[in-house]
Structures are given as C-alpha cells and as structure tokens.
Image 1 (tube, rainbow, N blue to C red):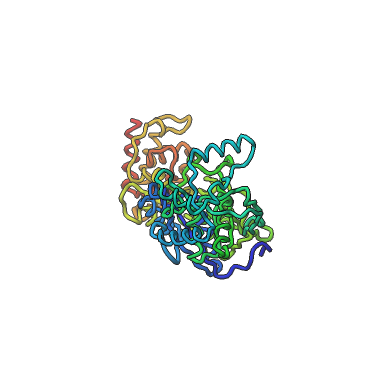
Image 2: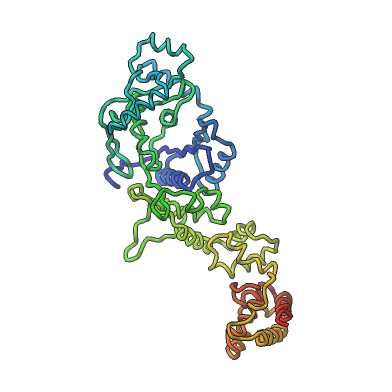
Length: 481
C-alpha cells in the first residue's frame, strides 16, 4: 500500500448525486469506485440526494438516478437522505458560526463585488473578497439586517495561511487560503450553499472517506476550512481523474451518450458497464508474461482492487472498447438469461426457442443487445429486396434462377427431422464446390434473408425451418422471372 494511504478499515463513504439531470456516466463511475471501496474494505455506503437547488431539482431525475444505480448493481447501506429535509440542521450550524464570530453577514451588493473583481483583474491580481464586512459592529449588522434594501449572504472567516492535505490518489496537495478570501457559505440563514451543506452532512453522517472527481479539488481547501472552524477532524479525500473524450477534452454530448439511461436503453449489460467504467482510472496488476485480464466480473474487480492502483491521469472514454467489453460479456451470459434480456430489443413477438436460435447464430456479431433489431429482423419479416442482389458478381439472372431451383429440389428431399445446420452443410457444400461457392450459396442466402449481409445460409435454413425456407426461395425464383 502506498505511504500516502493509511490502512483503510470499515470506511464510511457516500454517494451524493444532485437530481438536476439524468445520471451522468462520470458520476456513475465515481459512485462505482465508492461502492467498490466500501465492499473491498467491509465498509458502509450512504446515499444522499443533494436537492437544495429547488428550481432545477426534479423527481424524474431522482428516480432515474436510483434506477440507474440499481441497474448497475450499486446498492447502498443507508439512505437516501435528502438535503431538502435537513434545513434545520444547517441553520443550527450557521447560527453557531455566527455566534462564535467565525462567520459573518456580508451586505456588499453584486454591483460592488463585480467592480472590485474587475479592478483586481485589471491589475493582474487573483480576485478574492477584501473583507469589507468582516468587522462590522453589532449596531451596523443589526441596522443592515433590519433594512430590506440589501439581502446579505453569510461568509466564513478564512484563516490566512498555507495548508495541505494528502490526497489518496494524488498525494500531497498544497494551497494558500489567503488567496481564496472569505467564502460565501450561505445565501441566507435558510439557504446554505454546496460546500457548507456538504461538510455538515459528511460530519453528521460520520463519513470517513470522500472519493470524487478531480473537478472538486478546488472545493477541498474551502471545506477543510469549514471543518477547522467547527474543530472537527476531516475525512480522507481522494480525487479521481476525469473521463475524457477522444480529443482529450472533458467528456461531453458531442462525442456520444453521457447519461447512463442511454446505455441501458441501447442494450449494454450492467456487468459490462461496471467492467468498463472501473477501467477508466484503474487497472488490475498484469500477470507474469501476459497482460492483465480485461473482462472481469464484479467479484474479480473487488478482489483485485487497491486504492493505490488508481491512476492520476485522465481516462479516455473509448466507445469501441466499451462495445468490445459488452460483446464479451454477452458471450459469457447464460443463453436463457440472455434471451430474457434480449426480448425487449427484438421488435417482433416469437417463441423463446426461436429467439434463442437467432441469438446463438449471431452471438459473435453482437456488441450490444440493440444490434439484434437490425441483425435479426429478416427472420421475422422478409424485406422487399431488389432482384439484382440475388446475382453473384459476374453471374447472370438465369444462372441465379437455375441454382435456386436446384437448391429447392435438394432441400425438398430432406426430411424435416434432418433439416438442421450440420446436416444441411454436409449436403449442400459438395454441390456448392461443383458449381462455385459464390454462384450457388450467394443467391440462396439472399433469397432467405433479403439482405446483402446476413448469417450463413445454413444457419438461416436451420432457424427458419423447411417450409418457410422453401417459401422464400420460391419467391426469389419468381423475382428473377
């Protein structure tokens, strides 16, 4: 274990989503790491809904978050707690800081703050609040509070010193609190802001480890200052690398789906998503002489997982890699379970045994379950194809017709109980070798599927059965006249 990481024993971690949008793939990855650490070190995972943004919070988004977490297999031990129901708790602690003179009301107008900011920037200085309201007298505070002209915010008195914390992933991170200035911790006594509410919740819920994205590093010194103001011991912090798009920018919609629900609806397996997401920032140790195994079950991930193996650099989201991992997990599934999961992605009703046969012949081609819509639709409904595609390369329509009639004669003579892939291949392949594989098998396959690309004719014949296969071949014969 790395010297920057203390021994982790029965940690208390938390997931703290905001219900202001569908669950983002980046947040899902963060929650997954928290869940794995809780499982690995026999800890607890707490779910907290951060819904203090009343204008943007939405019950539909909250339901999506809960459903997506359950779909991924990320369960929690306590909660969900909701910040919107904890207002009295935040108010109590805000009053405590005000009474202890560790926080104060700030009556500066937005126009005044903007002017100061522009002035400092014009001088090449980093903006921070100048502390104008820090030392107002009790009379001044009372007078301003009684006035309805200015709506005050509440600021924390930040200590002017340099500080640091040991990040579980990045090691020692130093910062200068004097450059930050007194931060706003609440819009008013009834409206705490993010950093304050987070600290109160984490302290009250006895959170020991906070694992989150690196975009929160800038919040950490502010939160540590709030912990210090209360005299509380802070938790351990670890900041995961961001998920990057292929051009190394922060992942965004212009590079594809960013919501977990979109992957769920497109036929990705939760096991594959977990496998893929955990690899965005962590990899198992390579085995001697060979690379690390890339297709892992959640049990294998938990067994091999170590916090000090989490990488610091950004992780590039590769859709091709996700498709490959998903395809591998599909191949590993029990076929009956796979049929149950696949049924919603097939636009036609059919017997489960029929669907099983279809899936089995496409198993190597399926990257996601939604692929089945295009791959298999011709089994249910023969498309209205043009007769031109029945003709193999330099052959003629008359040759295609002749070979289809010959195939009909052969297939008609085969008993129903012998009409299976292995037997059909043994009977038809010698004839194909005599005539020419392309000349004989191409029009047969197109007649059966109506597609230029499909499964082999032997696979299709087996699935469709004798009667339907002969019907389709006769239709093709009629097409070429």
